[in-house]
Length: 311
Image (cartoon, rainbow, N blue to C red; front, side, top):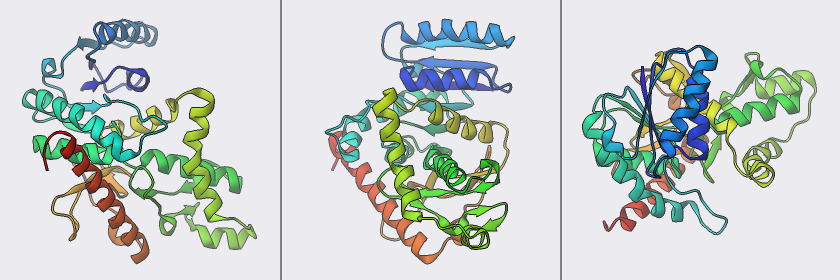
C-alpha cells in the first residue's frame, strides 16, 4: 500500500509518524514545498521504521506533481487559522493551495483515494472534487468530533469508552450536529440508559465541552496533534483494509437547495469503496441541521472560488 502525505509540517509529520506504525503500509511519499523539509522528515521516519523492524520505502518531494502511483493521498498542506480569521477567511486562503495541489497530483494518481485534512476541511474536499473529478474524495469530516464526543460521554457517565456509540455530523466547524438519535451505551439508547441509571446529564454541557476542547488544548499545548492523527488513522485504516466501519467522514452529497454535491459529515460505511450512509436513520430535525451545514460548506467553497478569481 503506497500512501502519500502532502504537507509535512507540524500535523502532517505527526500523521506520518502515526501511519508508519500501520502494518499494511509499505511505501510512503512525503511532499512539502519548504526546501528540505520532506527529506528531513523522511530521515526521521526511516529511524522509526528501523526501530519497529518495518520495511518501508520512503520518497520525499517538493512538488505534488512528482508523486505517482499512490493508493491513498492525504492532503494536509495549508495555512492554519489565526485568531482573527473566520473559517470562510481560511477558505479563501487555502482554496488556492488545495486547487494547485489537486491539479498537480491528480494526473499521476487517478486511481488514488483522496482524504482531505486541510481546513476548512469539508469545503476543501468539495473544491478538490470539483477541480479533479476524482471518483473517491472524502474529508476527515466530523470523525474527530465524534471521537471527542464519545470520550466526553464516557467521562461524564463513568463508562468504558468502548461501550459508547456516538456520532457528530454536519460541518467540522460551527455547524457540527450532535446526532443524539444514534447515541447509545452498550447498545441502549442514551435517553433510556440515563433514565435507567438515574443519571442527570446536560446534553448542552456535553456539546459545549466537545466544541471547546480544541481551544483548550491549543491554549496549553499550542496545537491539537495526537487526537487528530489517531482519528485520521482510523479513516486511512478503514479505506486501506476495506473494513466497512461506520465513520463520520464527509463524502459528496446532493441537496435540493445546492447546485453541486458538497462533502458533508454523515456517518457512513467506509472502505475501498464507500458504503451506505446513516442519513435515513436520522430524525427530521437532525436532517435539517445537516442540510444547513451543507449550505454553510457550499458557501465556504464559493469563497474559495472567489479568492481564486472565479465568481
